[in-house]
Amino acid sequence: MHKTSLVLHLLAGVHLGYTVYYEYLYVQMPYLAIYFGVLPSVGGKFKYLTFLNGVLQCIYYLIAILHDLLRLRRLRQLRDYLLASLVLPLALTVSLTFWTLCVIDGESIFPSFIQVIYPEWLNWTMHCGVSIYPFLDLYISAHQYPKRSHGLSALTTALLLYLIWMYYVVYSTGKWIYPFLGALLPVTRICFFAVVIVAAFGYYLVGERINYALWKSSRESGP
Image (cartoon, rainbow, N blue to C red; front, side, top):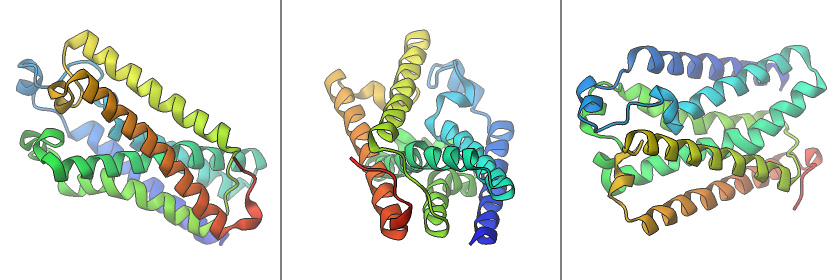
C-alpha cells in the first residue's frame, strides 16, 4: 500500500499542480469583462474558491508525498488533519455546488465568455478531479481523523474566512465574485451561504464515516 499511496500522491500532485499552474498562467479573464464591471478587479485568481481549493490540494499532495518518502509522524498528522478538515470537504463543496448551479442555471456560474477561455479538461479537473483524488486516498491508505470538533472548527474557520474575503471584494469593487449572488435578495443570499456551509459539514461527516468503515482500527475521532 505504501508504494501505491506514493504513486497516487505523485499522480495527483503532478496533475493538479500542472492544472493550477496552467490556469494561473494561461487562463486570463477577458479585459472587457473586468473593464465593464462584469467581474471584480480585485484578487485575481485568488478570489475564486475553485482556484484556492486547487492550491490547497497541491499543498496537501506535496505534504503527502513527503510523508510517503520520509515516514515522519508529524507529517502524517498534518496530512491526515488537512485531508479530513479541509481537502475532502472543500473539494466536495466546490464540485457539488458548481455542478448543482450548472444544472439550475449554467450561465450564472460558468458564463459563456469564460467557457471560451477555459478548456474543458481544466474545468473537469478543477470541478471533478479534485474530489476524486481524496476518495482514492481514503481507500488506499489509512487516515486518522482528528476529533470531530477540531476538524469542523478548522473547516468553519476556512469557510468564514472565505466569506469575509468575498465581502471584502464586494465592498472594494461593488461586484460579486460570482455574479449570480448579486441577483439574489439579501435573505436568499444568506440562506444560500448557510446551505453551502451546512452541506460542507455533511461532506466532512461523509469522509469520516468512509474512513471509519475502511480503516476502523485507525480511528481517533469521535463526536
